[in-house]
Amino acid sequence: MLSSSGTFTALLGAAATLAVTAAGLPVGASAAPANPAERGHVFSASDQAPGWASENGGTTGGAVATPESTYVVTNRAELLAALDNAGQRHEPKMIYISGTIHGNEADDGRLLGEQEYAPGYDVEKYLSCFGAEGWSDQLHEYCGDQRRTRQSGSNAMKRQSELSIPSNTTLVGLGDDAGIDQATVMLHLAHNVVIRNLTLEAPVDYFSSWDPYDGEEGSWNARFDAVSSVTSTNIWLDHVTLTDGDFLDRDAPMGPNGKPMNRHDGLFDMKDGSDYITVSNSRFENHDKTMLLGSGDDNADTDEGRLRISLIGNFFDGIKQRAPRVRFGQVHVLNNYFLGHVKDPQSPVTSGAVGGHDYFMGLGYKSQVYSERNSFDYRGPGADETVAVHVWNANHFLDEGSWFNQRPVDLNALASEQFGARVEEAAASGEPLPEWAAQGFTSGIEWDPPYEYEPLTTPSEVKRHARTSTGAGTLTVTAP
Image 1 (cartoon, rainbow, N blue to C red):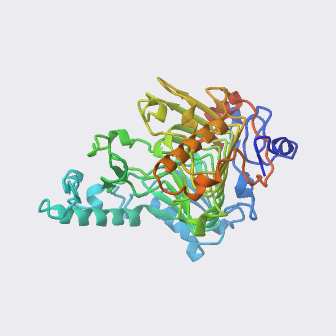
Image 2: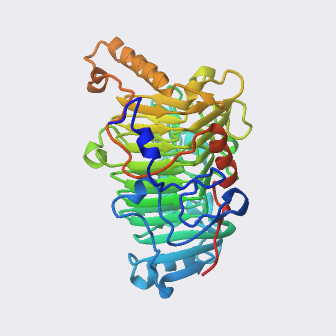
């Protein structure tokens, strides 16, 4: 069991799976050059996944694909054909992506939008059908039609934009402009998938649903993630950029609560027993609901004992929440760099201290998060360290060696204080204390990372790595 004293020094003496170069940059690949910040990482199909993805037999994707199962694709139709792999979908395959794959590209080359998916849908008409008692088909003559049109449009968009990735697949981008937009990269019952050197732009949900009773002000509920893992195992995302791209929520139509419509769901959500996943050397940019690990407190039958996930050496830039938000999982958050500003013009981060609800790491039911040497830079009027961690009903959390604005920070104390406040709220209700509240809070976890690694040890190293060696375009990939 790791505690505030931990087994950290024992791990430092082991041979590192997460290599540290002479420049002090973690690379997570076996064939890295001596100075990756200047020369770029070099892609090899045999690179070894770090973290939890190295367990359970490891994660190699399509590394052993034959020449017949190696593809270069430039559009959606070619990508779908490569994923099908001549009917051998689950056999190893290497798929190199050149340029941008558009998930909303029809067979005739047209790019589909709201009116192609749902002719006649009008978000203002849709909102006008909510009265004092909620939705009513009777409020206006068009309300029933708008309700049906919104749902049929959402279903049509799902059929078009969801790209199902089968087991034993590697997707890798050629050059610094390769990517997928307006699509959900769906990992459903998939095993052994590698995704590297791609920009994945979250799809715009034109049919996000409004719930006036969700929270104090009501809330939008978008449907589509950029990447979604459902009951999948051994997944490795590396040198990937995940973003809202040019479609920021700040530019969306205004909703009934006086705030812009939320047209995006997660950047990478993992649920329903997903397991042995690593996200490394990647960038998450200008997004709200970033990374949900476990979708509900009642999902112990699928999630308890699973959701073993490593986040290593990533850059979270302008992220408002869920970086990550965890239930049940044994999650290792190592050497990540978090950057936010209260008055950021694209994606402002407003913590509770400045009147908002934003946070970086979220601790939920039965989660056991091990946060290690992460760097949080949060600036602007009223910005303080409480943005780093938010506690709901977690009983275990351990941070070792993290920094806030380049100085040491005691995240264990912050988490313990927040847990105490949640217990007081529960006691004030007059109801018997829930199980989680009666158990108390421990600055420690009940598991050890089973893999070997060597962390960066200064905030400047973590920041430098994030700024120079993360995301798509920092991995050199040669066409087959």
